[in-house]
Length: 551
Image (cartoon, rainbow, N blue to C red; front, side, top):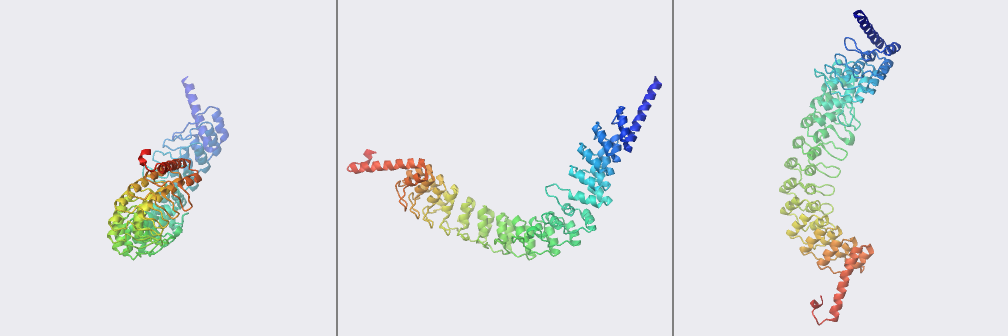
């Protein structure tokens, strides 16, 4: 009995060995025969290699296919932790790799020493396998126990194609970059040198037209920038919209790169498509160190964009007080204007930047400067509801009665925009609520037009003429009737608006409401007219008696 068991065990062992040999040799028929005889499909040799491992190593696609169909464990590992995908990747068996991944093999599984299938393929220069694995989610950041990544081993082995593939696919965002750009981004001088050694163009461009030097300038990678420049990179290369590396370095505040680029001959006056110089870029982003550096190197302080924006406008727009202070220290004109005659103070008022506005006013900026349409900084602050700027401007002599070309005062603007706090503040500072525009409209007209009920209430409480007439003899009541605003109509009537006053075309508020289909207003105004008519009738009939008797 003992002899029989021994014999059976020996036969099984021989069968397993034969099965594994058949798999390694790619003998599909023999593999299938063994499986019919109930051999264990996952049996392995002394090193833990099973049939799937052995067939994968030598690229026997048909055998691998049948083994997987019949239930072979796709992620079974050897004693060293290698799966079939590790082994196929190491051997460069592209078709087998594809099949294993499609069957569900883990692409980022690590062996005992931390090796991934991607590392295996990179180590042996199998660039197509590397591409496939990357496209199927392989993570090239996974390192071995010794700290080597797939890129590191490929570079160590001098596998240029694999290095290029890995660099091109090293994208953490949505934008894919060429290999040299990735090296520039990572400040990987070794990888860049390898790429350039193979006659790689140092000015190769990405889809957006940027060169590796643009990328190095963005990240402040001076080492890679030096390498690129020494290899002939164009320091003044104009990318999309005529952006040079110096524009990029200035925008991102990389003073080390700005210095290097200028030393290498970068044009300090270069302009983008919109007319931005590097100084504009630094000022807009608030990089005072770069602003100072550029000015010390002779950057034109009054250069303007196509819209006429000077660097001081840019720093004001971004509320960059220190950058603005440096520009003013270098004698930037404080009242420099754009093509629309906007000063830096206009810009600060628009954005609500109190600190910059105060700096400009302290440096004697004109608080009443008029833009092309006649708007002063105060008008703009009122329009944008910048109460703090309004307060600051009035303290520095801004005219509260300044008018635009169309006759708008700051109170007109604030009333139309519904800026409650500003309307109150202007009235407290003796703004006239009855100043007419060129069309004869008072702030009350504009508030009615903009359906600003609360503003109308404030204006009326502060003495605004309820029946002020515009050019066509329209009163605020006519406007409210046309727009169908019952609340405003009622408010105006409560404050004594003449219900039957007529426009130039002899329209009353009732006519207008009826014409515009404003039924609620028509009813309200109609009732008020009828009440008015009845009262007049009583006065006419009983003129000798006091009117209070009849009311």
